[in-house]
Image (cartoon, rainbow, N blue to C red; front, top):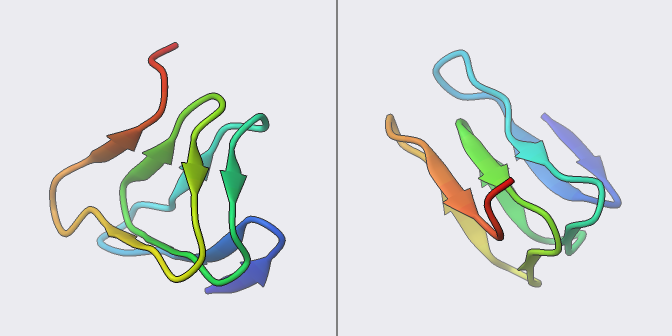
Length: 62
């Protein structure tokens, strides 16, 4: 688990969250597992995105 400028990221079921360089993730947001935050997306304060076995995608598609 890491806490950084791009929120808290937790590896789950062998997957690490991925954040596009142009996305914003608040420092208090939590990303868990196979979560992908796409270009120009915003994940705001206190949000929790948890893939829980299925992938979760947010933001524009590449």
